[in-house]
Length: 555
Image 1 (cartoon, rainbow, N blue to C red):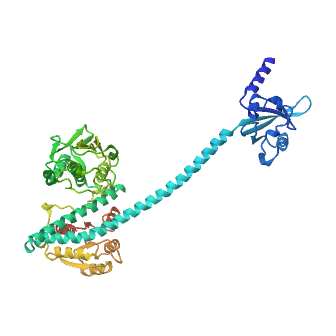
Image 2 (image 1 turned 60 degrees about the vertical axis):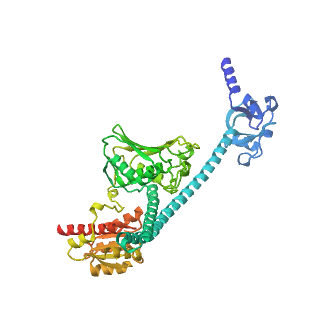
Image 3 (image 1 turned 90 degrees about the vertical axis):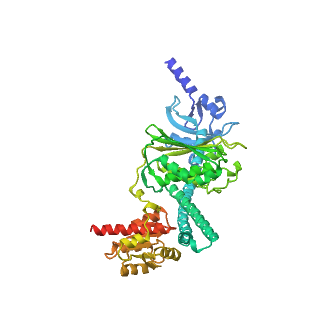
């Protein structure tokens, strides 16, 4: 028993919690080593005295030390938190618990108080709370900024939609009239004027490409890039793009060295979009390479999993810090003047959209793209290598809606002339244009009037009246109209028996995906993109007429 008592005494003495035994009146009877350290005083000084001088003024519920002791003695308070004020030391916040030891030999009740230092715990909790408040504030800011960014993104998309429409509307006139002059009036104008008209036509084409590039970037950002997949030969696509750039590469003496397997597996992808990929990569190689240098293009098949395409030039190179940003939209990298050749500006400064579009197209096909370059060194040409990985088997599911091409394709072999139309159709077809763009309609009239009877309505209401009274062979309408818009007109025409079967094509410069989807959802058969060429417009109308004739035959 003596050994056990000694063991218990040592345990109490060494335990890392302050233990103090007090009487019912608060006089100290015992305290252990940890309590001495908490109060920073020898136990001999405190035993027989009250703890009150060491207790902070603000206590539990504003009670004094004596009141706290009385609450403890009656069992009303068994745990509380208070501030200790040790001698010559910072205040210490402690958690106190109380339990009774019963009465001693003098029939006086004794209580045990345990003191646990929670100062650091409180400071830590305060820091956590402060961080939580800061994080909550940051989270609120992020939510606000995300909402603002979403709003700005929507405004940007709306702006691009409107801007593209407004840009394409005058482009339709510039392109349309210049096409008519080039195709039909060469012998009636001065040769110098004719060359100026050709320059205007080429400038319109360049501006049209810029507008389409901006729209492509928007579609990529919104993950709405539409594709028309087919089985194709990547090597043949690459060689076609090299041939298209021959006039530029030959001026600079730049040669393309191609290394392709004799037989490549077929790739399932969008041919036109992949042509964009190759053309942008090859154009950059030409632009940033010195005269007389080679560009090496390889297509390798790695197992049965992927194609590895590389485009290596011996140009000015790309700095390491720029390599992280070159695939961002509107980021223009490098200086074509560094190679100091006469034709350094043959492609101009660029819009900084090409590589961004390339990345979007490659990733839309389930692939990835990156660049390797040792950087820019004055007077040297370290070159750059662009790598493109494409899966042999498509890693994405093609949506049925994606198979509809929204871009008018020129196919010279299948182009239809006006004489063929008049031969195959006994009566002169009636074409109704519902469009407030007078210039576009006038160009269309000039192209079509020899083979068609052309009716024009500048508002939806007039267009509906003409559709019901004249029952045209084909209706072409703009989505943007005063009064009733094109979507509502189309739905009305599709809901009525007398106009339900008339072929309808939207005739618009608005080529954002949401607008295109609304056109087809309202019941349209096709879509003609402004600006258009005369041949493209005739081909579209011809296909609509033939489709209607086939449907009537099988009824």
